[in-house]
Image 1 (cartoon, rainbow, N blue to C red):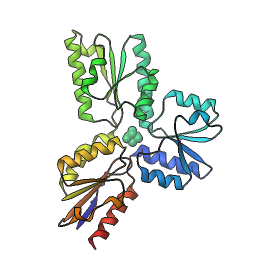
Image 2: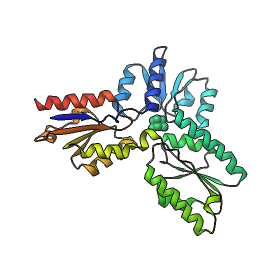
Image 3: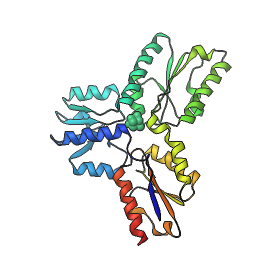
Amino acid sequence: MEIVIDPDAGFCFGVTRAIRMAEDAAKKGPVASLGDIVHNPEEVQRLKNKGIGSVTHTELPKMQDETVLLRAHGEPPSTYETARLCGLNLIDATCPIVSGVQKKIKKAYKESLAAQGQIVIYGKPGHPETIGLRGQTENTAIIISEPTDLDAVNYNQPLWLFAQTTMQPAKFSMIADEIRNRFIQAGQNPDKMLRVYNTLCHYVSGREEKIREFARRFDVVIFVSGANSSNGKFLYSCCKEENPKTYFVTHANELKKEWFSKVSSVGISGATSTPRWLLEEVKRQIREMEI
Ligand code: SF4
């Protein structure tokens, strides 16, 4: 049986960097990540075994003089202020791409105040990255996750549109087009009123097409991801649409022998939060099932 691991699966640059920073810090003393460093329970456990714990946002103000790592998703300004007041030693592992988006939004927010405009972010409400991005606007930005949310926007005021880095490119374009149409319907010139900033991350935006192609190549696809990864859920649904024999697992011990009966090829893929070692472990387990 041919078993192939998707070459594009595994941690993105930002997550790899944050984990490396956490591991380096743990060599010098105890460190806790603010929220799980990655949406993958297996990797969280591996890091815990190395002395990298995690704390919640509720626990943060109760800490004193400890070392806390800010993960790749980034944080709003209020987190930095809390850390300062508690005398925490911060290790800022915000992905440089996310920091760049935060800076752009902060700048646009200042412009929008002068122009009585509004900042709109295409993102998931409650997602840590979106919370960090919205924090740049004193929590005033409007979060849009579906075109149906666009009623919340005022089409007689200028608008700056951004996106959470991991959202879907096709939907971002659809939302930008819909905003344009609504400006026209309101009798406004969208070229003057709308500024669109495509802040999607190129590490993930190209993956949909590639993973669809990958899923079509195999008899069976095993998709490995933490259950709470939004990127994982989306990429899994792409695989499932292309190949109905796609199975979602969070760990190698969830594999079922019957999935591989009379099968000659298996593709293994995962989310941007799925560690490479876990994909290798799944491959090993499938090989053992063959025997
Ligand atoms: S998905 Fe992109 S922006 Fe987000 S952490 Fe990874 S590299 Fe950074």
